[in-house]
Image 1 (cartoon, one colour):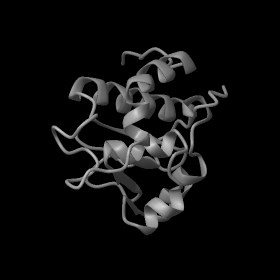
Image 2 (image 1 turned 90 degrees about the vertical axis):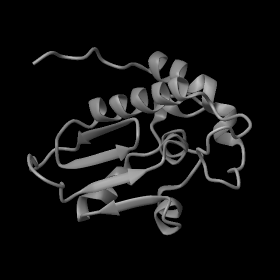
Image 3 (image 1 turned 60 degrees about the vertical axis):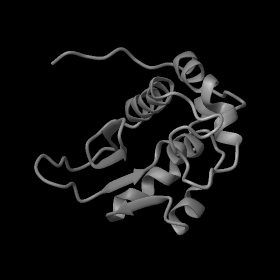
Image 4 (image 1 turned 180 degrees about the vertical axis):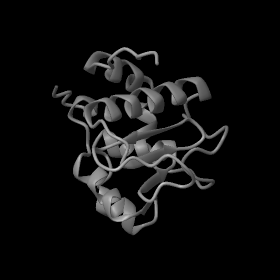
Length: 144
C-alpha cells in the first residue's frame, strides 16, 4: 500500500488561502456552493482546499471509526476504534465543502452547524469530530 506524504501547516494554509474570502462571505440565495455565485472558488481550487484539510485532519486523528464525507470531493476515515469495512459505516459525518472549510477554520461552531442541519451526523462517535474542530493549523492564527 502506497503512503501519501504528510500534510503540514504550510500545505493547509496554501490550500485555504484562495478560499478564505469566500468562507467569510454570506451564503448565496442558491446555497453555499452554488455554481456561478460571485466569489465562488473554481472547482479545482475548492477541491484542493477540501482534500488537503480532510487529509490533514485524518492524518492527525488516524483510525477508521468515523467517516467524514464532503461530497463531491472526498471522504476520509478517522479516529481510533472499530474499523468498518462493508456497507454504510455506523458513524458518519457529512456536509458541504463550505461548511467543512468553515468548521476547520473556526468560522462556524460545530454545535450550531449540527443544530441547523448544515452537518448531518449519525452514530454516537460522530460528535467526537466536533471536539477536534477547528484545526489549529487551519485557523487564521495559524497555530501549529
